[in-house]
Length: 429
Ligand code: HAM
Image (tube, rainbow, N blue to C red):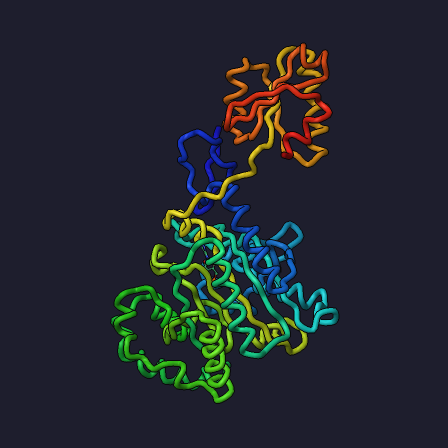
């Protein structure tokens, strides 16, 4: 009996060995993942972020409260379960709610007046699986807690753009909007409903449901008819309170000062109830209408989740979508951890000695693999090549007797015999 992967998931496995035909997509290649994750961590480091890790499941109510009952995610997409002990838990569909829950549980504000947190991890949404949309997807994200000034909003967008650029993804579009405050949104929602009501008969079932449960989300419909019908709907930005309008104008000014091109998108409302003021998304043509990443400000969420009144802003980006984009753009495949040396022992004595020779090289910080199979020399050299090794180290009875090794540089095929004691130094170069 063999078992398949659950729908909407995929395996991430080591890269195809060197010299073989490349058939693996970036999304399945662990070397690509490690590269993207390490670039994300190093870019975040330059902005002063520190990493947090939170459970992949949380109390179901956390997501109802933070993300919102009327959102598509909570209404249709969460993986909810009851534990053997009777607790109602949910696999996290996104990272913000858990990060804020942890900020409150750990009282992080006491040690950090402004907490800059980064995270990387899987999220679960019961979506219609397709390329770029998975039931288990991975996000790299950041949250900044304790800072309400508009310069931070621009800094977060700048971080996202810097990350994509560091990977070679240059051709991106930054879309920004402001969703105001709960209060200023209320008068907008009245206007939006008044506009949409006469058109409801022609709208999708989803938008009919949204009209009742979460009218703002009608603007986010991907249905072409809905989009056309809402073309002339009123703009949120015209209903902003003065402070939100000023905040938004400053965010736009900072983005201009930073040299980040952006578009104001009046239809950008994002799929979560927690947003206040700035909302943004980053897109790349190769992904169509699927966003590379998105985020926004949430000035009430910490308080809503039992913490002190603390403004927040953050964003999350789908790592799978980044990898698909890199591959579509023809960017070079990040290479995996290549071996420094591959040990080719010939004969029993050499095989016995190989483990300790390799161990000494590893202690010197080199990455070393061994042929464990007793293959012929030609096959061992092919293995060394496939592992991307710089050197093949051939040891036979003579070498063991004289405590030497024959070191072959694979790129040049040049070979020399040197004492074992000098091996690490030679390989290190
Ligand atoms: P989100 O827009 O739902 O925001 O997700 C962020 C990114 O995760 C998306 O732009 C997309 O790249 C990726 N993503 C989402 N769902 C899927 C999926 N099913 N398959 C593949 N990729 C996906 C959030 O989750 C917010 N927590 C972001 C945030 C952080 N806002 C403030 N702080």
